[in-house]
Image (tube, rainbow, N blue to C red; front, top):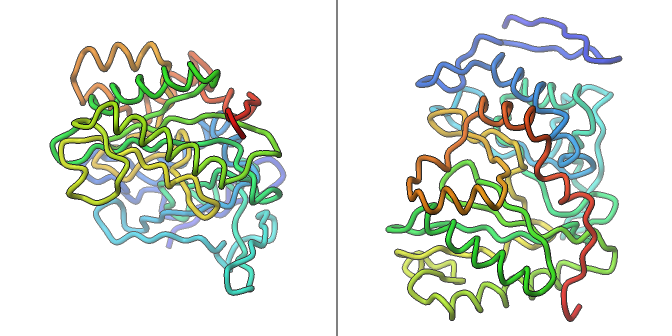
Length: 301
């Protein structure tokens, strides 16, 4: 196995097999993956900081076997920051914290193409920083349908005095986030609130929306997955690559762009790859930065 030692700040990170093609039909190697995450690090690191990372690893590329890894690998360098998370049986699980570029590069050397994080930080495990609505199109629906529902959801939230942010899933749906950043808010609050809003949209658009996970209920409809608002649930991190044929990215968009793309009605226009993410970050900065800063209160809670 060919290895090189890369100095990143005060750390030396061992990198291996940089020429391995992780996206074979696109020609995107491990070196390309590392370079993407290095360049996007100013935007993605604040969203990873102090959150228990779930790695989704593709050691043989997107065409090979993959696996999720919640426990921080035992062979980690001593400088990788970790936290111990209590489990239901009373034991603890050691998780990785990606709090710097050196750890991000180490994680990506493990071919963790996708990075998934919870809504709470390890220091406040019962307090979600935000609430998420995962809009997932069922069979016969697509991301254009998700766009319409995202806009309707934005308008309802706006009427309730809540600002929200939207990103692509990097696959076929959209994610709408409501920043909270208040110690008083619990996961019970966000689950009840998000389920209620999903059911309101379901009643308003019965032919287009379902709040029910069952596959039969999702045909031709957008499933609003409110259950993502749980302490053990994770969602793909903003700016993370996705394991698709090409290196697509879960990318934040402005609401005006959602309106335009939804009017254009071309699902392919909702797909963005690594180069798009880098160009937009350089031009616009982090469109999701407000998610970490804006303090909001759920009505009635």
